[in-house]
Length: 373
Ligand SMILES: Cc1ncc(COP(=O)(O)O)c(C=O)c1O
Image (cartoon, rainbow, N blue to C red; front, side, top):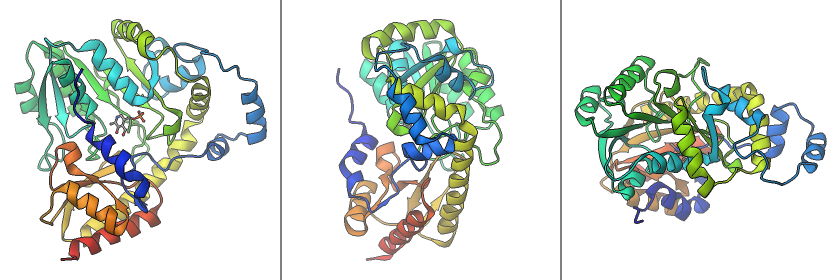
């Protein structure tokens, strides 16, 4: 099966190690094991003694009851039997698309988004119809355009909410409208929700599962919960038929997730308030730093991100984004991600969800770079 290069992942693989100022990262300041235990009110020695007794078996094939309980707590009304743990959200996206999409289907996918959503169905031979998100629409889907793209052969609509790279967040009423359009075609609505759960004001962020019976949510411990090293993600779906089909496929490529990853994810989710509060403070503070920099730098423009951990920033310099980002890391040590990785030329993605000092210094270095001949 031929598949396009996954541009953002290739970029990070090639350049992340060279970063002095890593503004390419999308996870909220990753936690060490010790920090996690502290946030969860556990004494490391006691917890490690407990871990030492854990049998390193396949364990709960479809996730421990504690893990599923924790995942369900992130949604309005999700039952444990409607959750399937996966190898990260990357495993979840791959599994759900390869399970449900075949070459006779068409699917509609927003752009920019995480490339799996369009390159995997294209590799299967399905027709992919791209719904472009524009700065003029604050990177929210144009519903008229969506109606035009959907027809009776549309098997799935795919959104990424909150969106990577733009940081846009679909308002609840618009999400309901998107569900209505999906319903009119009897299509699945897949929402990659890895950046969900950290709202600016602490309010509940609706999931696709709250608005649509054929909604499918992909989530993970990587971004909002700062635990990418656990490689724990999940598929949650309202339709039991979808869950059954996913389980059938999962036997072929996963068997089960890691028993230690399951345990630590369950612990984190049982203490999610502490992690969410830490992370809300980080994103709120750094969004302000980013916004202040954009406002004082006439060479750049953007739509202020409403959620997530990244922003798409357009720059005034006559240089393609890949060349610009390469020169920037080589000369200033600042890692951004080229807009071309998201088919958004003339822009860069800036990840801002870690320490404010690195962010400030990295942005100032970029200003210097933009002003050089
Ligand atoms: C929108 C989106 N989905 C999925 C993933 C993969 O995340 P995970 O670490 O859970 O596999 C990423 C990682 O950048 C992402 O941005």
